[in-house]
Length: 136
Image 1: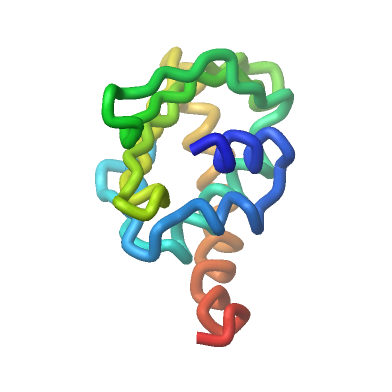
Image 2 (image 1 turned 180 degrees about the horizontal axis):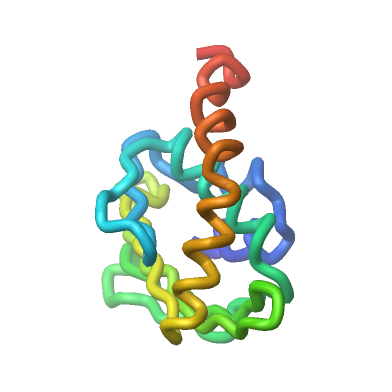
C-alpha cells in the first residue's frame, strides 16, 4: 500500500502498474460499468495522471486487517477543485485487487468525466498495447 501511494505521489506509472493485481477491478467515479484487468486499470491511471493537476494525498485510512485503505486526495482539473478518495483493497500478495474512486463536488465529477472522455481513445490504445509491451 505504501508503495502505491509513493508511486502516485512520484507520478511513476511503472510503479503504479506494479502495485496492481492482474485481476484488479477498477470502478470509476464517472462510469457505472467496472473495468476489470490490470492493463485497462493501468491505462486509466496513466490518463488520470495526465488530467489531474496539483494532485496530493491529504489523508490515509486503513482497516484493521491492513487490506483495506482509503486515500483522500485533492487536485485540480483546470480551474475546478477536486476532492476525492481512492478506496483500495489488497489481495493476499499485497497487490491492489479492488480500486474504487469517488470525487466531489458535482462540478469536479463533470470536469473529470469530460477530461477522461478526451483521454479515452489513448487509454484504450495503451490498454490494448500493454500485453505486447510486457512480452505476454
